[in-house]
Length: 454
Image 1: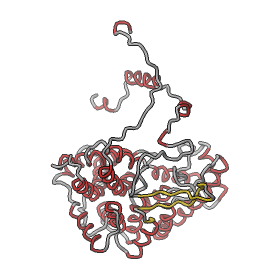
Image 2: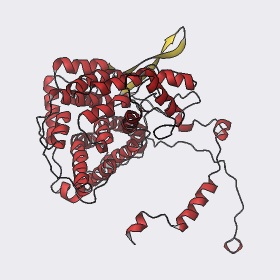
Image 3: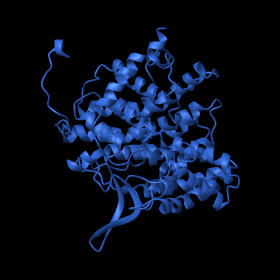
Image 4: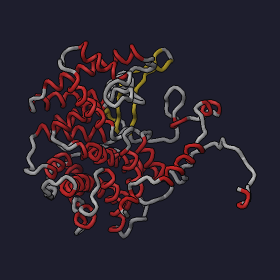
């Protein structure tokens, strides 16, 4: 009976839930009436300016004849185009995620010695506290690895005798340590869930300090620890593309918001993890993967434009998949003509699909990529254009890497913590005021009713 207290919705709770719903009387037109920027966005979908950053820039428009018009998307880390960063990594054949983490944290690209020194520092912090896996990760494993990850990050507070020190050197130390540890915390949490909940074998591989973050992820996840150079390169590229995306995305804004209160690093990062967990943010590629699984069941000829188009029309009209009316992986809050991350990632996914003998599936993805904007434009009004976003290909890529779906969003966190850390350091360096958004009260003022008269 006691266990049911945590899962059962009792009649009393149902009654109180009715009270909650009856108390919610705000209607959509009130947001227009009071000029509320719902979701911190104006009526045109443009984000409300709430802060300044030097860490990254997301560009989706250009000025033509004095007017802002949609353009192919561009993403910059500390002023460097991410396309050039990834190209440079490929030409020099070094660890791209580590190089870009250095760039985000310190504002400059490292030379060979600096990158080697920084990678050694990450390797130094790879070790979890003694018995942490046994006492924290293996006890009460969660079916949602993001929750397990947040729990582990919060528990790290207890092992840090300078946990509340928010001086820049100490916060930097904490951030570098968490950047190094998040791959292990994610994979070990999955291994515990995979064993205790799903009944599979349990194994723990220690990370190798000479490996990159991408290589270590594959090494500690796979039973035989093996991986191909292309697999490691694709995962490294995925980490670079997911590690930062301006200060306005939900989890990064959460980092700024929570950091402005003066709280500790572990609480700030755990809050960001909680934000990223949401299916409207970090879980989108899981939706794409499941949508394509359903599509493969209902589209017999993956090269038949008419059959694919009918399925996409059914998606938009809530007749297929989850009946949400959405084609997952299409469209972005900022980008219009193209998402540069999807453009970059596409070629790596194509190469891996050939290596894995799954080119036919890649062809299906490219057919949907081509047809979906046409279907959406025909069915709905499009004001700024629509294209594939980074989530469109990433789920397929992770599936080809053999990554369990439970780790899709945690791997996003493994990448994005580099950006969160840079933004936390920026917030603590430049600002000393707590963020306090305004909410307008639109209810009534009523006279107090004495207890005996209610």
